[in-house]
Amino acid sequence: MKNNKTHAAALTAAAVAFSSPAWSLSGELLGVDYSLSGLLRVEVAAKTTDEENPYNQRGNLFNGKTVDRDGGLNVGTLLGLNLPLPISVPITDSATRSVEPASNDFNHTQARLESTLQLRFSDNWAATVKVRGIFDATEYDEFDPNQVGSRADGYLYGEPNYFEYDDFYTGGEQNRLEVAGDNYMVDFPSLYVDYQNGPLLVRAGNQQIAWGQALFFRVFDVANGLDLRRHSILDFASEEYADERISSPAVRVSYQFGSSWELDMFAQQFQPSIYGNPNTPYNVIPSQFTVHDRFSQYDEKINSGFRLKGFLGDFGLQFMYTNRYNPDGALRWTASGVNRDVPGLPGTGAILAQTPLEIDPTGVWSAEEWFTYAGMARLDGQEGLNKLITDFPASQLLLARPVPNIDAAKEELDLFFILTGGVGSVLTGNGNGGLRGHLERTYHREDVFGTGFSYIFSGEPGSWTDQLILNFEVSYTPDKTFTPIDLGQEYIVEDEYVTALILEKNQRFSRDFPAAYLVFQWMYRSESDLFGRHLSGMGATVNNTPKGVDGWNGIALAVQQPFPGLVWRADLAVLYDTRGGVFVQPALKWKPSGNWNIEMFYNYMEGDLYGNENENIIQTVDWADEFGLRIAYQF
Image 1 (tube, rainbow, N blue to C red):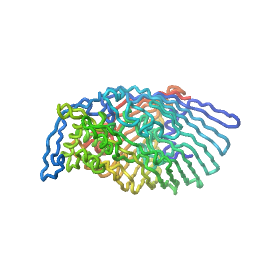
Image 2: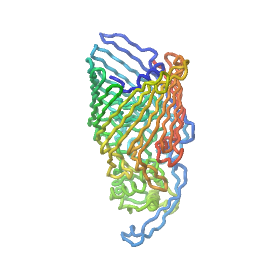
Image 3: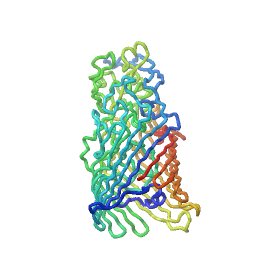
Image 4: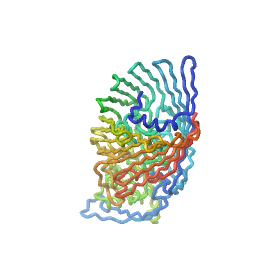
């Protein structure tokens, strides 16, 4: 089956000496041709700054920070009266979040073993089996719930678990062909059978489906979600999500019409994206919140789609349609189900269980923390509080009322957090606390329509326009479901357009060096950013609710320059968010012998070049400046 990327040949030419096995075991057994190859690789990423992941307990921005909490109790609310003028009794204290800050040397310390077996039974039948094993050495300052007396509900909310899936009360695997523990996983990225008869190719089994040709950006590449438990999206950009794109059991049929057109169709079991677990190095969902994943309600759902691709003269054309459940899912408040009393206030646990709140020191401690993290998550902290109250009426039994502005929200939130610490906090002014929020992750069916064209320019030999490839892709998703920025029960449902313009070519700068591979890309998204967050949630700060932005624009650049002899190769990848964020990844690959492959790279992130940092995507990961090293032995 074709790679389905117009620049695959260029990438292969530049990288073949770095990616192909030094040797493989091959031969014939019982009439079956076979080939066995693999690699053993050690991967590390060393921190180059003192910043920690702020979305984890030990990287929380408020750890060890004393915050004045200024709550107020409305007398009318307390007495059940509707007074013409609100009378508020101030209740204040100071609190210091009790989790010990981390001081990590590494963000990533993993080893992997991969082996690929290819079988050829006849001219028509073949099979591929790829097994992958990952072990995390966990060389990190890990969170210990016992140090803070945490009893947070849910399987993944105690000590860090790097690979297991949470069905909330028991661990396990979300990926069907995977076995996982707290620091290891073994899966089959490829496990399929091929049948080929002339122009017909049928592939059945666990597989990736990679459509489109964008680096960083995914327009046509909508069949599979991403598995972000390993090195998130911070591996080599030139690998184009090859390790992150999560496989799924599928039947794929490709038919070649003459020499110009190909029809590619698939039907697959729905497999959602897998995010980093709480308190693991690259976790992005703030760990003060508990997620109830509802995947068990969708695990028998089927995605399907087709792509038609071909040429009309000098123009390449493609058309795509996919009917799928969006693998990213959407989040909203859900009842915690946790019956745990506020200290000194018996009976309050039964009420809290009917709300999205849970008493635990790993939760949010202050209004300042609440609004800081709302901005970082691209949410509306004020309306998020209101929806927690109006969508869950039991919260009003705890004297909670909807608020008209951010100042009133801060006063009410700080009152909650003070009371969370118990009567002692109120009387002494030395606050404790912690309120965890509970969310549910649901999945929603959508139709994705896409079209695109390509053109290869013919210029003077050696000029910049000679063999320059232009690709343009656009997709349209009507009635797409997004996470509501207030986490209310009503999702945001809007039509979304996504476009990408790609320019690529091989350019030789010297007779002594092979040609360099160059890429320029531009993407526009009408309703969400690159991470799928709705744009109406952009721009919030600790003192302001989000103002939203119109459209997301990103620019990507990539360069691959092999050295003479193909022993060395220099790479550069850049992702620029036009609202003030940049990710730069220079890399160097060295193949000292046929069996060894050494890759070095640096990830540099800057999320506040200008403007509001909560309006660009880089701010989400700009703590992760790191030096990466991958040493592989191929066999």
